[in-house]
Image (cartoon, rainbow, N blue to C red; front, side):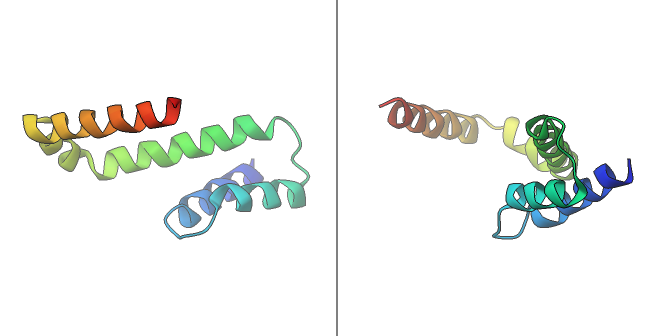
Length: 87
């Protein structure tokens, strides 16, 4: 259990630096001898990061979603990116 807590701490600390937090997780999982479904572990750790960001930026997200223009622009950019990605 302590190994997973340490992995979570590394994920949280390295997420905001311009380095690959996923790379750090893979290296530490290898060093700790964690071999069981490392993809699931990475996904759960990244979801934890997402949840922390949502909690931290909750008021900003509420402000964003209460206005129509930023939502329309966000939808437009997402649509354009999706079309480019599919092409």
